[in-house]
Length: 69
Image (cartoon, rainbow, N blue to C red; front, side, top):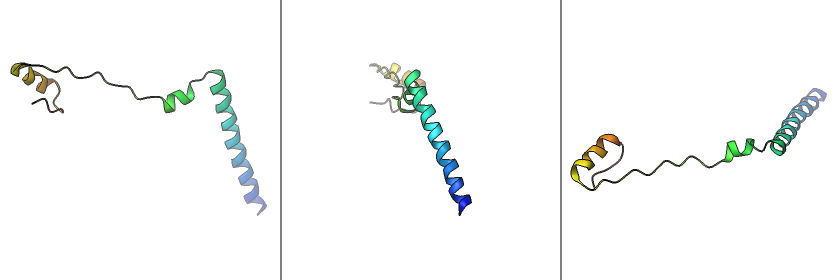
């Protein structure tokens, strides 16, 4: 029983130490949470062609989209 309590105290100490280090890093540099919870990169919109030959070229350039409109 004493070994289990010691193990729980060690694990709690490690978790607390990591939490304090993460908080200190965030207060000093302010980059960690932005890395984990930042917005995903937004891709540029695909240009729309108006004439049929250009739609065929778009189909070759963007094969995974439905360019036949």
